[in-house]
Image (cartoon, rainbow, N blue to C red):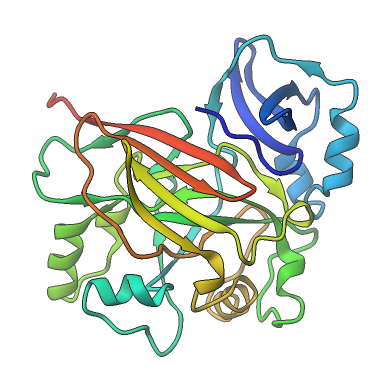
Length: 290
């Protein structure tokens, strides 16, 4: 299942020669997939990202892919994945919580990342609830050294692009750890618990502020909201996070999930959409014990 981005966007895919980069271009309500040649988006992130006009020019004359490729995670090795918790008031309320007085953030380990089209794997030894959480992914990209103490006015200059993220969570484990005053790390960071992609839309290609964000499991609509309902906006989150840690080009920021989170089961098809960013789809499988 492929839904086109609103404007040309880039993606990574597997080829016989190794990882390659492509361009996804909307075409007659479908998506045209092009090989991007020697374009390296990770290098471009360190130069300040890729602008929409640059990507559109790169697409001109690019070779069209003959078949739909196997997608890879857009950013395979961020220095960190920073995630906001309880950033939609209705999501906080569905668990009986209030919105925090200041932004609440946590991390996911890099090995949690999973591309579009690849399965979310439920650990064989966990028999309690594991939830989906659809979120906006913000990919940072800027030239120069890591940034600290970023001002609110300058924060959006660090954003290279946007994608879709699913913050899969072992819910019972999270509750147990919270009750024991332990961090959330393990419940969030199992391998495959961070699907992301498939496209990265350049930040200047899309107005993300009021975009609709939804998630379906099989044919059931579970989550539906708009990004305008985020408690902490993108600029505010970047400025706040930069007070606590150095932000590096290539870092991923997940902006929190709306209400409607729910359990995943073996065999489910999880489909997350954000207007303008296409669709992130993953099946769910139960791990086979070794």
